[in-house]
Image (tube, rainbow, N blue to C red):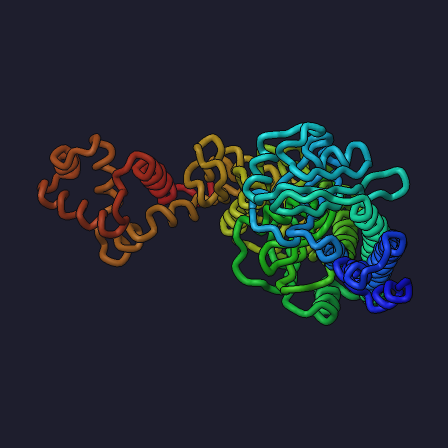
Length: 626
């Protein structure tokens, strides 16, 4: 009969089948001792059966753990690792749901990371503080906990939001084990049922074993991800370093080309050509006043100049739309600005080009200032020491012929001496003249014979440069010097300077600041101040048409006009004084108005006309040059 039990064990019979041999023995009429022996054999057989079953189950669990470890080792993505762990836990324990919470070191609690089988959004978004709920208790104590009925278990602290989420998910039995790395708990792995269920020690051990594998897999995945991130950062740093090296090399080559150009005598246009050749696009170079020295990028708005100011403040290129702007200053004053129209360009090359252009402009300015000092010293000597020997030779070495017509211009300005002196020096260099700064005025000696025209142009241009009124008086260098024209020019500069200065003072006194004029344009005021006192020229300018008409027609319009002014502007008294009819006076005055033009009766014009009439009358009896 013992053999019969061995056969049952061999074919893994159910527990009920082990009653068969005993039933058969009783049916055959076996004695009680035999029946007792069979009962003992049955008990031992069932013990062997349970042992074999437990070992088979343990073998299956170990196999599953082995397979799990292999699966986790094959995974590289952290999310995939976590999902595999939770899914395998649900399978091994045959529960309705499995889930994992991970520790949040910043907030000091645990949060739901992965779920498998969950149906509640609130449950998937749950956070558990340390010691709260079953999961919080496991995380706090690093000890597994199991409950067959969650809501009836008072071993852990129930929290309303946790219980609401558990209720919504419908959970009753819950088992949780810690995820440990050394002494540190990184999370909790849990399995749960929606009906009451006790969790046996073997199931707790199984889930704990899975959690141990899971913790290692999570840490490996984390380390692998950190390694990947480090490799990516290293690769990116390598690419950045390589690109930076290439950009530096390209910038150095461009700088070498620009430096070579400068050493060979190249100018800003040549530097601009190198920049556009290397970077493409279109480039404009602006001077300190925002005027184009080279190139053209079209209409520029105020924002571009604000960007140029920002570039000078930052010491680097500033982007505005498709424009790259690099500006350089010296002592807080702008020197040059480069504007490149390009979608993508190396800012370093543009910045180096801006520095090279700034150096070129500084060099030009230094040369101009040196030459300006030489020219200024000569003009000072012509004004203050006209008897000094060698003035004409010094002028000739600067490319000036003092025997040719020149104009002395004296400009009165309110300040900004350095800017005004630099502007005057530049004008003198460009127009082959001389310039000097003298206090709050600048003096220029420029080729030409139109004193008034030169004065107006100088006043307008310097006013625009200074953004404040600059008043220019001018006088022509010329006269009847007995010696050579070179000597005449050298000696007449001082006299012309005094006359030009009086003209500038007169303009300011007349309320015409910011204007320019010579003695001729100042009318009788100029006649009083001019050293030449060109009486005939003044009379001709004021009364020329009237005098010519009298000479051609034999009329007496000049005499009639004198009488008209002499009688206080009364036609009737004028008629009595001339012994003619008043209608004749009216007709003559109409003719005067046509010849002299509108406004001849205005006070200032009338005063000039009366002075000219008086000089004309004197000129018919005296020397016209007196």
